[in-house]
Image (cartoon, rainbow, N blue to C red; front, top):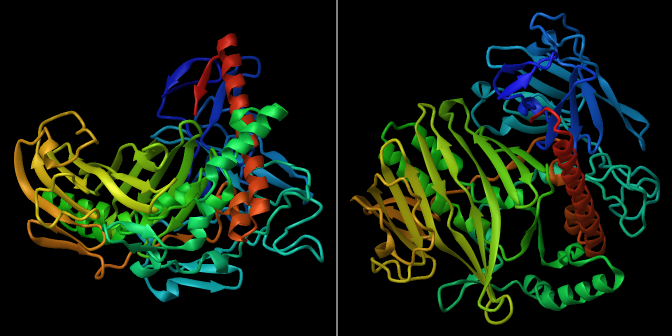
Amino acid sequence: MSRMDASGELISRNSLKLDHNNGDYCGHNEDLQYNEDERGYEVNFLGGNLLKSKFISFKLPTQQNESSSESEDEGSNDVSASLVPSSIESKKISDLHKNRNRKINWLWNQGRSGGTVQVKRVGMAAKGRAHGDIIPSSPKNFQIDGDTFILFGRKLPIDREGQEPLEDDLPEFVYSEEYGTAEYSFLENDTYSNKSPPPLYFEFEEINKPKPTDKDEVLQAFKLNDKGYLECHDQKIKESNKGVIPYVLKELAKNVLTGKGVVSISLPVRIFQPKSLLERILDACSFVPTFFKKACKTNDELLRMKYILAFIVSGMYMSADLRKPFNPILGETLEGYFKDGTRIYMEHISHHPPISSYLIEGPAEYAFKMYGAVEFKGSIKNKGNVLNIFFEGANYVEFPDGHLIEFHYPTTRVSGLMWGERTVNIEGTGILIDHDHDTRGIVVFNPESPEFDVTTEPTSFEGLIYTSESKELQKKKIASLKDVTDIEEEICDVWGNVLEELLIDNEKFWEIDSYTPYRCFPMPTSLPSDCRYREDLLWLQYDNLKYSQEWKGKLEVQQRHDKKMRLNCEKARKKKKTKFVGV
């Protein structure tokens, strides 16, 4: 990307961006705009998750050898601190209800790869350990010691913000009755309302508890019915999903009468799972360390494809849930790790359409990268009784030697929304593509016309690994292997059951009772935009549906407001034809 220097000249550089490393972050949806009068750049945060709608302006250096100033981040050993030009000022953002100041230090890195603007959140972001320094998994690597957490041999501070009530004698789980929000709210300076008090954040000790890994615990709300489908037998979940359509119609009529319009209808939180969609996406990645470690230890590109196929199939049952996850807020993030040293970074980057991006990085001994941007899509079928859920978009696995494999997830089908048995099943196709070696893999879940006798149950699948020079992506709506059109030479047969096993040419690559999934653990200090600070999600976890519903509505109103601001900014920019660089 090119940028303009202080004289308005365009100079060629790599992309000017905000650095997400070591917790340095301020949202993805910023605009960096050149100001002719001030001879500098302005950053306008529209709906950003750290500065909200604040306006920050600063000047970029005109020379690489410009004098530097010291970083105000105490204890920082970041080499970029010595490269901060004196022309960049530190800005203060008042924290009104705590009477504190949080400083934002703008750092301009001058290096061979171009410049990087960094945001340092003083006293909040714990510097992560480099992947090359990861220590093998051991119980000693995951210990809480007072207000510090030992993670891979390094002591990290635990953020205790918002976990204790501000005043005495408050109702249970309420943070304050004086202030409308806690420290890391997505709302800014919201006034207190007894209809939607701010909730306490969960203590790190609570969110750090291990999640279920046994298949019976993971699937405890389901049982296999006579037809072979996973059917929900949890009465609480089944009751909560009743009457949703009458509720929506009632809210629609109420909004029309009050002039609020159709878009302000908020779905009832009783049908929701106390999780963000970011967490639901991550559930399907529970076998990443298991199979990617093996894939990194071989140079056989075909064997690597088999391991990635095993990863896709094995994780399907981990995300089985009839409840709806919360749609992420624009800029919402999730950061965590698996106990093998794998690090996880996720962010919601688009409101409409809803798109979330992610990066999963392995430790030094198997330093893979898995990344992608997936759009959450749904379609209603059979007169509203069936919901098909898609994670649309390409995902990539990159190995240390540069080998790259693309893959696409299958579809989740939820039936019985209006009548009949409430079931969930994996359908459609999973697709793998190795562009460098003209090799592809396809798995058809619940095929209509099974090729193999062992794939006749609804939870079964069958597939192929084959060669193909086609540049087109195989269509997703494939009923059986007979519909695959780009096969040149078959290499391997694939079959199995998402609740049992995976076999490739009769070799067992995965068995549900023999493999334990990894679960994501939270960082002791996270970004203020982390999904664990969402008020609607917190109140649902506290089992207070009334407060959760109120907060859900308030956050949706804020998102619509932010969207309007972005659109107005874009209109103003086009009208003035202002020179700018998009970040």
